[in-house]
Amino acid sequence: MSNIQAYGLWPLVIINSLIFIVFALSFTQPKISRDWRSLGGFAAFIVALFTEMYGFPLTIYLLSGWLTDRYPGLDIYSHNSGHLWSDLLGTTGDPHFSLIHIFSYILILGGLYLLSSSWSVLYKAQKSQELATSGPYAYVRHPQYVAFVLVMIGFLIQWPTILTLIMFPILVWVYKKLARREERDTLVEFGEEYSRYMAKIPGFIPHFG
Image 1 (cartoon, one colour):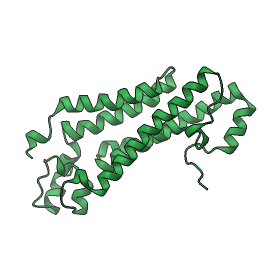
Image 2: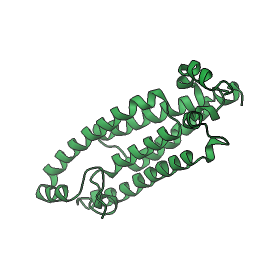
Image 3: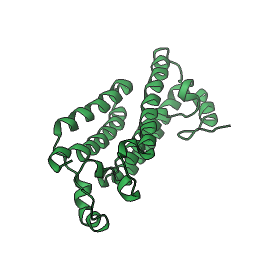
Image 4: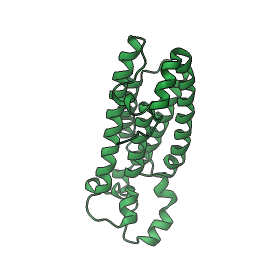
C-alpha cells in the first residue's frame, strides 16, 4: 500500500472519530463541567489516535530512521506498518487478524459495552433519585471511567502512538481526580448510604472471588 493510499484520508479521521465520540456522548450525556471534562479528554485521545491512523503518521515519521535501519525491507509508510507491535515482534500476515489485534478488539468492545450498561443503570437510578448499586456498579464505583480506560488501552495495544502514550497516563490521572470529586458530591447527597457502599465496593478494580 502506498503512502498516498495509507494516509491523508481525512474523511476517515472525521468519520471514525465521530463514531466513537457520539457513542460515548450518547451514553454519558454530560450535564455539568465535570462530565464534559471526562468526555473531552476521551474525545481528544480518539481524535489524536485516528489522526495518526489515517491522517498523518507522526509517530512513524519520527521513528522512520530507526525503523528503516532495524527493518530495511519494511515499507514504513504502509498502513500495516502503522501496527507497530507487529513490526517490532516481527509477526507475518495481516496484522488485523493477529492475536494482539483481536485482544485489542476485546478490550475496546468490552469498554464500550461497559459504558452503555453503566449508563443504563445510572439513568434509572437518577430518575428514581436512588444510588446506582446494581449492574456494573455492583463491582466498581466508577464503571464509566473504567470503560473509557479500557477503550484507550485497547487502542494503545492496536495502534500505539507517541501522543496517545503521553495522553493516556494524564487522562487516567484526570479521571481519578474527577471520580474523587464525584464521590464527595455523592456523599453530600446520600450520606451514610454511600459511605457503606464505598466501604464495600472498590473504586476502579473489581474484587473477584
